[in-house]
Length: 393
Ligand code: NZQ
Ligand code: ZN
Image 1 (cartoon, rainbow, N blue to C red):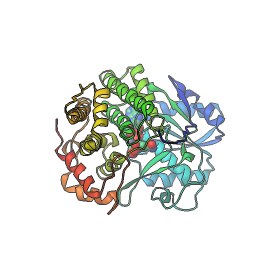
Image 2 (cartoon, rainbow, N blue to C red):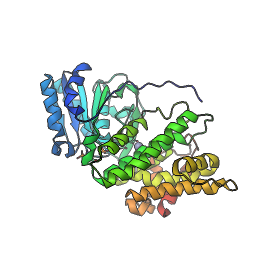
Image 3 (cartoon, rainbow, N blue to C red):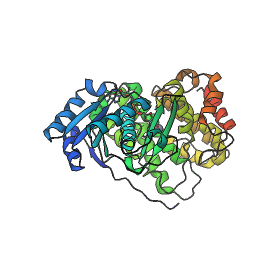
Image 4 (cartoon, rainbow, N blue to C red):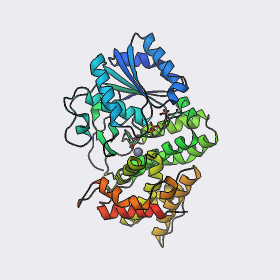
């Protein structure tokens, strides 16, 4: 196991109706005037925004609102939020929604105290040094942004989707009420489940040896998702299954299952180009890319893929030919994705084979290499997209 620091300072406020307490938590973490950031309408329609406003008012906290964040959130609303915070002296940002409002809130948080363009942090030209405190009320188990130090934003000019990671934007608190996810359409639930599983797989496939504890934690999260996702798709109001998924989504991405081991993250990078170009859901893009990446790299460590197949998917080990076991595990993953309504190839996602050169170009590694488990070159990335074009069951 490698050396590591594990820092996850967020206070998680978990359970039914806990959003009604968010005013108290804003106060606890020093907020006096809040920017409330939310999405395209679900949180207004469900009455959640009203309840959050009520809680803020009951605690004497003023607020301004920035609604309309769209999935694959754009820089334009970030600029607007930065201007609002500066003009109105807002000292706390509360995101209500999924990864998109949360990541917008995080981008605003580091943009406000910075003299330059906040995009400098996403293009890698500058590192954030200060941030306005951020907190979240989560409405979809997916991105894990409620416990992560990351934010992913799309620059409208050129549709570049890029991430920034800093402990400064780890949420002060995150309210996780599983009941809030009961209004999710089945497709969004499945996209979220796929993203959660991908966050674990990005960590599971590693070159680091002797990491039994994190292997087993990863397997536990994946097996929970395999059990609970079909249950909530069949019965959206199943609170307990929703609760297990919601906590799995946090655990999958605050890095507790990934410490002490090299991680990969190429599937995420390769997917981000799809959601930037086609504006598809991140989870749907991962359903197409992650198994394709697995097929491309499994020979690098057949036994690790065979282990995943046996322990996670219950495949019988073929000792004479472990590659058969490894490939069966990847096949079971695709079958699972199909069973929860996810696309498994380019056509089903709405992506086009002829765009592959442009996707690779935008990925932007030139002659370099990227990734942790297997280092990929531009030609390898093109091949993974091609595997995703022809994938079938
Ligand atoms: O906008 P509204 O109307 O709220 O609808 C949203 C949106 O259409 C809807 N939704 C959310 N909660 C709902 C609901 N509909 C009904 N009932 C509810 N309770 O779901 C749709 C998706 O919302 P979004 O916030 O985009 O979802 P998600 O959490 O999947 O976030 C995706 C974004 O996060 C980034 C992705 O790349 C993508 O841009 N990621 C962020 C990460 C991070 N910050 O750590 C890591 C991830 O790997 C990921 O890259
Ligand atoms: Zn993700």
